[in-house]
Length: 548
Figure 1 (spheres, rainbow, N blue to C red):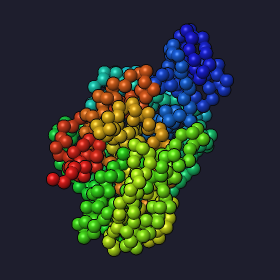
Figure 2: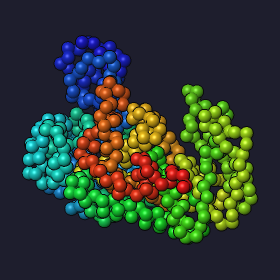
Figure 3: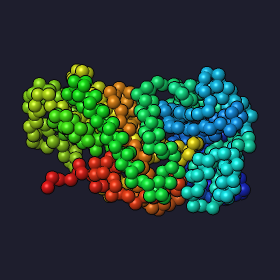
């Protein structure tokens, strides 16, 4: 049997594992965490199969980083089990290049963090195997019941498959939806730090995987996550099993109303902050599928209830002609760069508008990639707020000529806090991708695989142009809705199941399918308000309807 691994042709008997082939590579398979076979991610412990081309996954790959993260989580859980057997551990959410972790029954002090780090390094030195076990669902349920892991026991009740994959280190068994490293010795790069009342588990630095990512203080983001935790306490919904119970017991409608009311109160508070600041320019930015457009409409209405009449300046009008935009080294055009905008003209117009002057705003033809020859006149009244919404809204270059005292900046993102269970979180990026897949398919005629093909580029743009400015915001808004996954599943799940294993996006589709397998579908869309952020993605939003 012949195959190519990283472009190197190899002859195999068919009995080898992918890991057995690594020594045949020029670099010996340095940093290998898994293998991409067609569109599927496989473990280094999987048996080799004939395929035209396979590629080693390292930390430089998105899927490689996910393998490392899942495995490092398990390493932490094993260390915590050794030191504090029976104590609950909750993997709460991502934070910078790390994970925020709770040990509710342990008071986190410097000595605790040091002991956990020491135990993790001992496990790395022992180079213990990370075993993959295929067991019956009944076996898994019995194990979780016996070890008091009720959160996993409950979510397993909603899984419709008869067999189950568990992983084991040093006698501790757990499950994770995705492939894992094969040995603890592969997980030597990490750091642990006390963070608030919890612990921050730092991953390798994306730009230098040989070292742990540096600790970055993000007080605004941490506060917003803590606020989301308070909302979950109010909603009495900690994990997917809690949400599923409400769907099954037909108690989701009131849950939706309370969830939406919490967001409405937050929007009203942001409106109050803006008024109290004395600013006139309201700047709104956030990553893809965060609900920026709907949020800006709702914030505008909240300001109108207090006697203000905000107007919106569209950044679309200020695009430069495509043929005048500097090209990338490969000849392509990065349409998300701030240099695609006529910043000088925008800054001039904003200064004049705030003085009460009229300006001639250009109009851009997206099909032609050029400005139209005509303009339209625009003017605002004294003290009339101006709203600018877009990915660059918080970049100071965009509004460099406006005094900071006249600017109020809002960062919006769906910071998903609903996890499957204590040890398996649902990533914010995956929840945003689901939103994007559904919206693109419903309203843009874009197939899921096309959306997934663009996602890596979208994410790179966010890392460069959005995230660096989030801590400069005066207010943050979490646009995640705790109930949304049980609504989104109806739209996304069948399309994701249709992605074939031969597709280069199969791994991404399966990743979404795997956590959606645990989510119950709800048929209560008539309960979702017409101004809900979720309506931006599933349709029926009042802000997109013409006046009668």
